[in-house]
Image 1 (tube, helix red, strand yellow):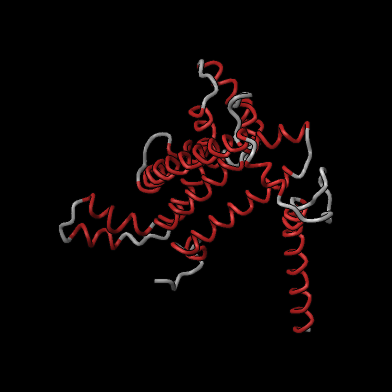
Image 2 (cartoon, rainbow, N blue to C red):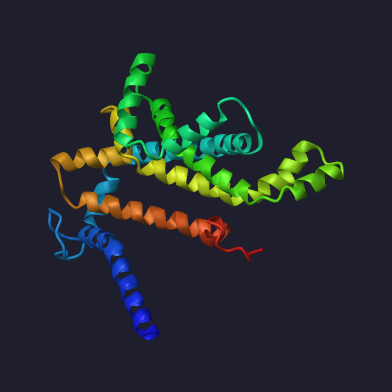
Length: 268
């Protein structure tokens, strides 16, 4: 019975893995077709559509915009997440419960509702669409991730080390820098990673705060597909998958994915 359960579990895991990777395989294969339309399996192999991507300056500018906003969102989310997490975890102040509820409800609110609300708010504030307003919109999505991850990191922190450092005469800043910050480093990196991916991959909210001259890469792809559906789209999708793989490899090389999410507890 145990062997049968193991075989069934392995088979189920394989099927789930195939189900998850199949869209990626189809996208990559379709980007190599020689036809002028998306087809699978591909008819012939060519890199023509990748050349088409790099030959379209609008896609390159949208990528630069998406990457720049995502990097800024990741950096700001880490700083705000660290400050907010420390404040919520260690201090009692008026509105603390309301702040926690707002941060938690941000995950439950549909992004289309956030997009409409942000559009109306920017209009009332007289803020024209710009990289700044796009960044503000994405911070609404990314900051809660950073705060929740920092809170999770602080929950497992033994404060005796901080008290010992303070008892030995270390000033508060050095206690924070050498004891507290290293303890939540994994949570901060995880928050930055989630913030970057969430911002870079966002479509719904960005649709409401961009213009025809200012479009993120997902919005550019969405608008392009309304009029053309050639393999340029799948070539862009393949490049985005490659970009994500490179990001994961870099994180694994310098931090470790298992350590990042707290699974590698024995790693030193």
